[in-house]
Image 1 (cartoon, rainbow, N blue to C red):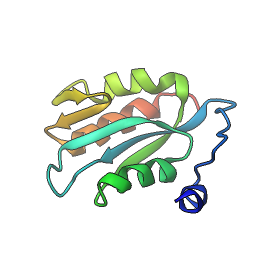
Image 2: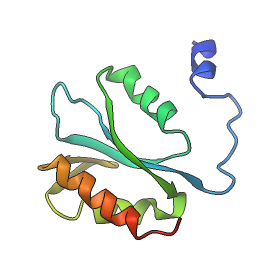
Image 3: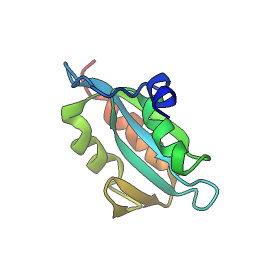
Image 4: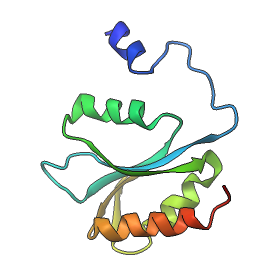
Length: 114
C-alpha cells in the first residue's frame, strides 16, 4: 500500500505548497450513481487528487481543471456554483447543469491574473 501511495504522488512527509500554485478542479465523484454530484477544490497535483477519489469511487472523473492559486479557491467555488448548485457536503455539490458549471469556471479563471 505504501509503495502504491508513493508511486501515486503521496509521501509520508508531504511538502507544503510553497507558492500556492496548483489547479482548481471539478471532479464527478460518483458519475455512475449521480452525474450531477461534483467535488470542487484546489490541489497542487490534480491527478494525485483524482486518484484519492478513485480509491472509494473507481468511476470518479475529472471534469475540468484550471491553473489556480490556493488563495482563490473559496472565491472560485462561490462564483462557479452561484446558480443551479446545491451544497450537500464539504466542497461537494449537486449541480443541475454541468456545462454551465464548467462555463462559469472558464469565465472566472479567464479574468484571473496569469
